[in-house]
Length: 485
Image (cartoon, rainbow, N blue to C red):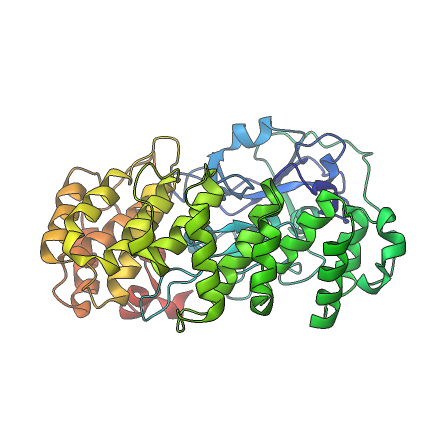
C-alpha cells in the first residue's frame, strides 16, 4: 500500500490467531502489518497461490500502490515486509480444488485491466467490452481484490461490497487458521477507534483544521449514500481553503469511482496546480470520465481531456501517470501522441500498441513485434499469463480479426519457443497458453473448443482437469464448464 492515508484503512482489529492446525492451500488469505511507521494495524492482505494449484502455496497475489498494481510475490517476500499475521482459509471446501483455481484466476484477470489503486472501499472490475473498445480500467485495494476474488458462486465474503471492508475484516472473515509460515502477531496491538458518527456534512470552513485523513475516512463511511450536492460542496470547500494533503488525496481518490464529468474543466485546472499523488488521483478521475464516453469521443469533456493530455505527454512522467496519459492518447488522439521513449510498465506498452494498431493497421506487424518484445519480464511472473489472456479476449471479441494472418504467425512463432507448462510463471499460465494458441490457430470461433481440447491431451490428468477453469467465459461456455463453477 502507498505510504499515504494508511491510517485510514482499517477499523476492525485482527484477533490474536491460534497457531494453525490446518494445511494451507491455494486461495488462503495471508495478512501482515502495513509497512508504515505507526500504522501497522491498518494491515495488508493477499491471496496465497503457487506454480501449480495442488502445490503448497509459495506465492502471494496482492494489490499494491506501486505499478503494476496487481502483483505476485513470494510468501517469504510478503512476510519480510512487516509483522506477519499468518494465513486463514476454510471459505471454499477443501475438496473443491477447482474453486481455489477460480479465486486466483479472478485476481489475474484484473492485472491486464489497467488497475488503479484505491484508498477507500470503492472498487471497479476492469472490463473488455464485447464491441472491442479499449479496456475500462479497474480500481482495487488489497482487501477489495480479495473480496472480488471470492465473489462467485456462494463464496462471497461478508465484507464484499461494503463500506466497512478492511484488510483485517477480510482476514478475520476466514474461519480457519492455516499453516503458511508461523504467524508473529502480538496479542496486544493498537487499533483505530471509531471516533465519530457524523457524516460529511460536519465538514465546514470553521473545522477544516481539525480534519485529518482518519476522521475524513470515517465521515465518508458514515455517508454511504453521499449525494452529488454533498460532493460538490466538499469540492468547492477544499478548492477555496487550505486542506491537508492526505485529506485531499483521499477525497480525490474517492471521486475516481464517481461520474464527475460535469466538473471536467475544474478537475483539469486543479490538476495543473497539484503534484505527486494528488495529481495522480485527478488524472484517474479524468480517465474515468473519458472511459465513460467511449461512444462520444467528440464530447466537450473528452476534447478538454485530450488537449490537457497533449500538453502533459511532453513532461517527465512517472510510470503511473504515463500509463494514464498514453493509454488515453493512443485511444483518443493517436495522431497527436508522442512516440519516443515512453516511460511505461510492460503491460501498458502492450495496451498502447493495441490501441494504436486499431487506428494504424498498416503498421500492424511493427506493433505485434513490439508487443512480443514486451511479453517477457523476469521480475513479473504475471505479465506473460495476463497478456496471453488479454490478447485472447481481444481476438475473441473481434471474431478473430484483430490481427491479420501475418500478425498471428508472428505470435505463433513466438509461442513455439515457449513451454506449455512453465513453473516460473503464474499458476494460470498453462490455461492462458493453451487458449491463446487455440485462438491464433482457429479459423472461426467454433474451432476454439476443439483446439484447446487437442492441445490439453499432452498434459497430465490433474493439469488437464483444471486447465479449462482458467479459460475465457466464451471458451468455458463452449466446453460446458460454466455450469460447474
